[in-house]
Amino acid sequence: MDWWNDIVDWLASDQGWRILSGAIIPFVAIVLAGIIGAAVGRAGVHRLVDQRDFETRVAAVASLVTAGQNAVRWHSQGPDAREHAQQVATEAHVAVRLLPVPGADLAADWAAHQLEAMRVNSVNFSLAADDTLAEYQNRLVDWLRHPRKAKRLFSSDLDRWDYDNIPIDELQKPAPTT
Image 1 (tube, rainbow, N blue to C red):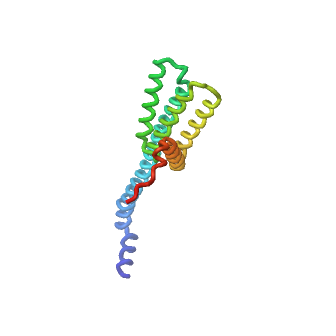
Image 2 (image 1 turned 135 degrees about the horizontal axis):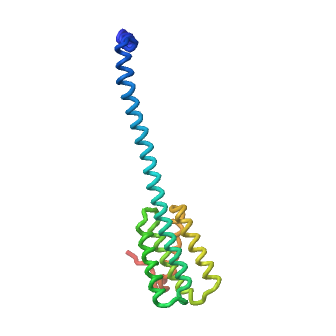
Image 3 (image 1 turned 120 degrees about the vertical axis):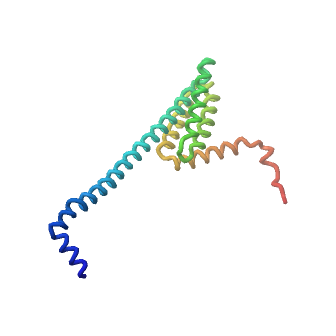
C-alpha cells in the first residue's frame, strides 16, 4: 500500500504533474485518437465497398432486365438487333455469375432459362409476354434485395424445369438393383 501512496504523492508533486500533463496524457490522447480515427476510417471504407457492391449488383440486374425486354420483342427485331440483344444477354449472364452474392449462379441460370422462354413466346406477342416480363423483373429485384430467399426460389424453379425436361422413357425405367 505504501507504493500506491508514493505514486499518488509523486503525481501530486510539481515534477510528477509535469510528466503526467506533458507526456502521459498527450500520449494516451494520441493513441485513443488513432484508434477512433482508424475505426471511423474502416467504417467509411466498409460503407463505400458495400455501396459499390450494391451498385454492381444493380447494374447486373438492370442488364438482365434489358435483355428480358429485348427477348420479349425477339421476333419483331432484325438480325442485327437480335445479335446485339444476344450479346447483351450474354454479358448480363456473365456479370451476374461473377457477383459475390449467394445464388448468383442460380440467378444467372434461371434468367437464361426465362430469357429463352421469352424469346420462344415472343412470336405471339400478347399480354402474357408483358406478365412474364413483369414477373421476371420482380424476381430479379427480389433476388437483389434478398439473395438468400430468392436463391431457394430459383433453385426450386430450376429443379422443376430439369424434371420437366426428362424424357418419359427415363422416368419409366426401373431403378437399378445391386
